[in-house]
Structure formats: structure tokens, C-alpha cells
Amino acid sequence: MSLTGRRVVITGGASGMGAGLVRAFPLLGARVVSLDLAQDPGETIAKEAGATFVAADVADPDSVKAAVDTAVSLLGGLDVLIHAAGIAPGGPAESITLATWTKVMSTNATGTFLTNQAAFEHLKLSGGQILNFTSAAGVQGLPNKAAYSASKGAVVAWTRTVAREWAQFGITVNAIAPAIWTPMYDTTRASMTPEQLAAHDEFMATAIPLGGKLGDVDEHFVPVMAFLSSNGSRFMTGQVFPVDGGTLAMR
Image (cartoon, rainbow, N blue to C red; front, side):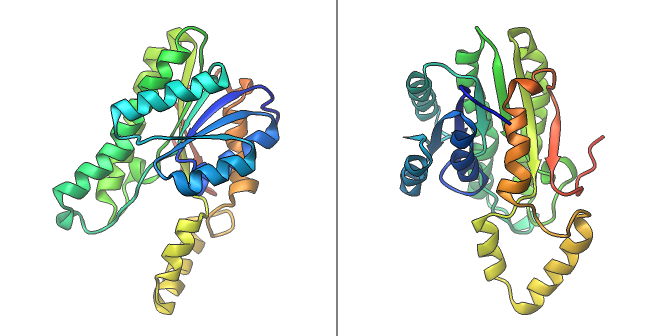
């Protein structure tokens, strides 16, 4: 899948799937600017990939506007926004503090709102693509992740709504629901006892029909994102695309 000449902004580019896309897309011909709050290792990842890094706090409107404007200036325009930045703290719903709720919603839901609006200002004249990260949690819920699930549900509703509103400008807006193995997942697994890990792996074996475990960034995720970032996907909008081995059966 060629992305030659595509001008792409990727948020959350300092870690996880965002970092995987920052590394992969320049190899497919895209020109990439990575946005993240963490300058280290964000700057290093971008430099090694042949991309450019710009610091940004997706929950802060001034920071988002300045970062997106800078990114578009560096790229000489914008074709695709991939909004991957997000956080996922857990815990029982009844124990969630207001501070945690506010932080999760500000980063995940408000961050989507702010980055999408900032991108819209640059896409409205010539069209383009926006890809927001949601989750199966935002569609069907996830125990011990109530705040995260609520924030990702907001991303789904926002995506479907602005896909209709912004279609007149030639802008497509879709959401991705990935289940991909990342360094953060490695950390989670390392924190489990042997008994917890065995129970977790037993659950995953039945929850993910294809292979029984989370997918690989380069093998399973990058090809889908490359297609959705290409001109080949321009007649697709308002959708949630699971990349999860069959866990989430969208209807």
C-alpha cells in the first residue's frame, strides 16, 4: 500500500500504536509529523523514522491548535489526521474519582474533539481523512474500565456525527477499534501473578477468534491503517473498523 506524498499528522506518536505508525508510514512514502506530550521518546522515534516531532497536549485547546498549525506548515498541507493519543486507567466504577474521570474524558473525548476541529480548519477546502481511535470498550463496555469506556463511546458518537456533517467538505471521518500488542500490554502482563497471567491468557484464547491473542502492529495493524489513510478508502465514512481478530462483531 503506497502512501507516497500523503501528508499525515499522528497524535500519540511517542508510544504504542501511534509510535508504530510513525515508524511505518514514512517507509510507505508518507510525510509524517508526530504529536505527543512526551518529547522523550517522541522526538527520538520521529527522527529515527524520518518524521518530524511537535510537542502537544491534546487536552489543551491552545496547544492543539498551535501544534496542528505547525505540523501543517511543516508538511505544506494536510491529507490525514490519525488521532491515536489516549489513556486507559482502570478500576471499579464505584471507585472512580472525579479527578480520574475528568482526566480520562479530557484526554480521550475532548482530545478527539479538539484535534478533529483543528484538522478540519485545514481540510475543509480540499478534503481529507480523519481516523480516530476508539475501542471495543466504547461499543460494548468493559468491566473495570468504566471511564475509559465512556470516553471511547463519546469518540464513536462524535465520529459518526461529524462524518455526516463534514461529508459536504469531502472529509471522511472513521474510527478504529484495535486490539494490538504494545509495550504497555507487556507492562500489564509483567504486573500479573502467574495465576493471573494464566487466567488472562485462557480468556484471550476464547475472546479473540483469530489466534487467541492481541495482534501485531506491523503485520496486522499498519496495513489496515495504510489503506484507511489512502485515497482508496475515500468512499468510506462514519464507520468503526475493528482490527481485533474478530472480538468485536460490528453491526
